[in-house]
Amino acid sequence: MTKPDILQVGYYPEWDQGPLDAAFTMHKYFEAEDKAAFLAKVGPKIKGIATRGELGADKAMFDACPNLEVVSVYGVGYDAVDVAACTARGIHVTNTPDVLTNDVADLGVAMMLAQSRGMIGASQWVRDGSWVSKGLYPLQSRVWGKKVGVLGLGRIGYAVAKRLAAFDMDVAYSASSPKDTPEDWTFIQDATALAEHSDFLFVTLAASAETRHIINADVLKALGPNGMVINISRAANIDEEALLTALENQSIAGAALDVFEGEPDLNPRFLALDSVMLQPHHGSGTYETRKAMGKLVHDNLVAHFANQPLLTKVN
Ligand code: 8YV
Image (cartoon, rainbow, N blue to C red; front, side, top):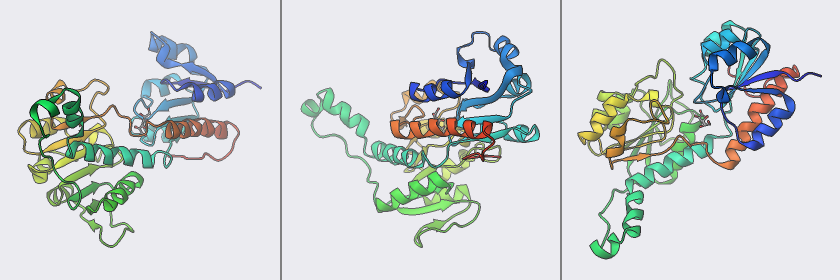
């Protein structure tokens, strides 16, 4: 039996690549020097696209692949795939929810703790001999007992809130409507009101046109000079210019960010700020989770071409 032809948008680790190569004929778009020529050549035989959350799939690919049936995304976020365009063309889209929830939440909480307690600077203090030459490390801010606002109480937001409640933090959240939560979690729908209420503001919203720049200058002003914003979702949820200005003016205390506009390149103004913890978009970056994500990418494609129900469908 001939293997279905799949356009592979980005790199996968070998433990994912092996099973994909065994089941499909993979065409490595990311290795092609002339992308347009590559698409023109392989496009007509492509039946599926395998991509990553942050890479997505664009209109040029859909146009070049008239026989495309399915797009399998390695990531829970599918904002980089035009799902409406796929649906209109009868193309299925799948993602990798659930398997990454706890790791993304863990990283977000770790970022908040590390930044609040100055752990990166403290490590440097030990390494560079400052402990010996200068003495005690400057005091930092407490986390427990403070107010945290979780903007977007989906799967990841809920996992973050659960962890923070266990840190004895006072949890508030926003969502389109109140959710079934422990009694002492407060529902505050409006982003500015949530920020005003919070010492720490977690951004855990799935990105869409509606959520673009939901964290803007007004929300940051409401968060205030003792507030910290933590983003483990997508850069587009924050107006980065407004965030940089707020950090530079110290009108907020700090930020912990796993995602950036134009990543992996980032605005060099971030690099000059000690008040920001910078992470390379690796919320889901553990062996265990990435293996589970890769398996879902593979299994969704296999299910599709075997005419079986998709495991984790988006549309
Ligand atoms: C990336 C993510 O897909 O799940 C998401 O939405 O952004 C991530 O898990 C990851 O960086 C793999 O490329």
